[in-house]
Every structure is written in C-alpha cells, then in structure tokens.
Length: 452
Ligand SMILES: Cc1cc2nc3c(=O)[nH]c(=O)nc-3n(C[C@H](O)[C@H](O)[C@H](O)COP(=O)(O)O)c2cc1C
Image 1 (cartoon, helix red, strand yellow):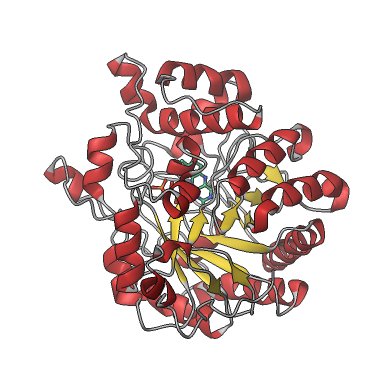
Image 2 (image 1 turned 135 degrees about the horizontal axis):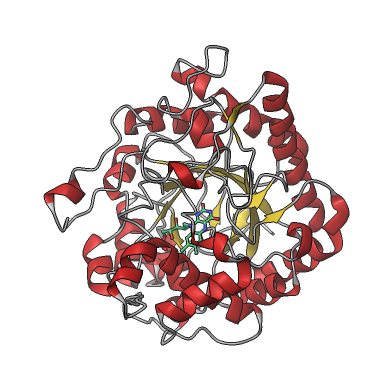
C-alpha cells in the first residue's frame, strides 16, 4: 500500500488531522514502523473461522467471509489463528500452513481480504498443550505435566519440547510467515496470548525449564524473540509483523463482578503486567510493527459470557488500565482489543492516546460493515451482542463458553456461504451446528482454564 502524506507515523501516534477536519479519528490512516500505511484504525481481531476443509486447507468460505469483511471497511483484517503444524491444532476447523500445497487457495483468500485497500494479516500460532485430546493425543509444551483442575481431562499430558524441537517450531513460524507473504497476505500476527504455546513459554506457571528457555523472564521470552527475529528475516524489513500478547495471564478486571468469587479469580505467579510491559518494550525495540493487547481468561469473563448485552456493555473496553500504563512508553502502535461496541468509546480511546487501533472481533461478525457505518454514515448506535442460550439452564451451564464460540462460528459459516448473519439464531442451533461440523469432540473446552 502507498504511503500517504497525511498518515500519522509511528512517532506521532495521536491523530490530529481528523480533529482539524472533523472526520472521526477512527477513519485516519496510520503509518507503521515498517513504512506501510493502513487505511484506518479498525483492526479486525483474529477469530478462528472453523472453516478449514480436508487436511486443514482454507476453503471458498474463507474467501467469501474475508471479501465481506474487506468490503465492510476495516483497515486491517487479521485471520483466525493459522497453525504451523497440522498435527497440533488448537480448535476444530483450524487452517494449518506448513508448506505450499494450498498456495492457490491461500492466494484467493488473501486477494479477497485485501480488496478495497484493506490489509489482511495472517495470525500464526501453535497451541502447545492447549490442544484438545479429541484432536490431539500427543501435545507438546515447554514443560511436561498434566493440567490440574476440572479441565485436565480434556487435554492429554504434553511432552516437554526438546531444544531441537523448539528450534523446529521457530523455523515453522518463519516458514508459515513466508508462505503467507508469498500468497499475498500483507502482514502477519504472531499469537503470543491466550495460553497457547508462546504464552506457555512466557508463563512461569507453565514453564519449568532449566535451560536457556526457562527461568528468568529473558529466558522465558527467548522463544518469542527468536520467532520474531526468524519471521523478520523471512519477510524482510518492509512487511508488517504484529504480536498479540496478554497484558497478563490473570483474568480481566471485570468492572461489575457478579460475585466476590468472580472478582477474585486470579492466577498468582503467572505472566503479569510488569513482565508483559518488559516484553512489549523489547518487542518494540526489535522493530515489531504493532502490539495487539489482549489477556484474561476465557473460562469466565471475556468472550465466553452468555449473559447478554447488558453485562457486555457494563464491562466497557477491556485492558484500558494496562494500555494507560503502556501509553507513551513505546513508539510502536497498539491495538487494544476487546469490548469496543460503539463509536464514542473508539473515539475516546484514540483521542486519549491509549491505543492507535481499535481491535474488534465479535461485533464484526454481527455487523460486518460496522467500520463503514461508523466512518461514512456516522452511526452512533451500540452493537449489542446477543444473549446466547439453549433455553435449557443445565445445558447453558454445561456449555456456556462453547455455546458462545459456536454461535459466532455458525454466523461466520453463514457469511462464508454467502448468507447474512442472523442474530435470531439460538444457542441450541449453535450447539447442534458445532456437533454436526466437528463431531461431539467439539464439546470439550477450546482453551484451558485460566486463559482466554
Ligand atoms: C469465535 C471466536 C474465535 C476467536 N479466535 C481467536 C483466534 O483465533 N485468535 C485470537 O487471538 N483471538 C481469538 N478470539 C478472541 C478475539 O480476537 C478477541 O480478542 C475477543 O473476542 C475480544 O474482542 P471483542 O470483544 O471485540 O469480541 C476469538 C474470539 C471468538 C469470539
């Protein structure tokens, strides 16, 4: 994409031009450290589409879905997590890219996602031990050790990675990034959040290694830094590399906890905010182009809620306190992800300087054209996420989180078949859809307790 003269640069991150012209700040272009400019501040966050075909190949449904999102106006569309090893999947329906066998389809996907000047970045991931037993009986992790607690039985005990295996995974990230670039994706995002493999290395709770990949924070972050370096060598200096990272592994600060119990669930000793800031500063110094700030747990607070729009709105924008701590300490643009539901919150976050891009996921499933609605029609409404229920309390309790994920997957599947999202579809249909698509194994938790 051409550099534009009115784009703010990575050293001037507050959009001033918009204020002068009365355009919404969210419509301002942004120049990344690598010199590439994105057309506006909407950053469609990664969502596993669960649309892969045989052998984890991308399909025509990916093409239709991303064409729809590109037409919706977002500056950057990040794909759902694409795995670097097809034997190590995080969720049913993941795409995996290890070699060029699917290059033709990847090209079609990238072309659709970059229509109308959108950027389309591939999110690259390895699940580590967060790979359900129904699809993987031999997961790997920084350290061995069966998961404790209620969810342990859904995940096989992982094998500790040897150093050559670690080097192989680093190489795989670089290979996948190279193929993404070759296929026409215009950037990559390395997934270091949500309890997957890179996050497992970062976390002192998961990483008990005594070699150069464990112990001190410098050592625990080595795996991530090696991946970033290897990817940069592969894609070259002018190609955007983003990193999605947890602000901490402890659950999100819920503004209105429903109970003392809920506000009290933390993971003492996990990867915390101070450690995250240290890692982010290093990533910034390494020339990463964007930091996508995430975190929290999926088990309770963030995206697995099925309690409806009121609670969702009460939470407001996620990780704002952390972003405030980070603001001004690095030149690298931030995409704060989670909880953006209306234009007012977006403008406030951009004008205050806590973020340079608006990371947004579920609202774009319900309203794929939300960016254009806000930028062109000055839509001032609030996207209300539905209360997803089967109508049967026991089922809701048993499958709450999966219900929500499946509901959004079902809607992405509809868009991928050329239909419109249908907010009236209920939770029971979402559950049946998930079983039909991926078998009963889909009813295991997708991510382990304690992580988003
Ligand atoms: C169906 C679904 C799939 C998701 N898959 C991913 C993923 O593959 N990678 C990722 O980093 N985050 C994933 N997420 C998390 C989102 O990127 C985002 O962080 C979260 O939904 C909060 O943003 P929101 O409030 O705008 O939805 C997923 C979320 C949903 C609802």
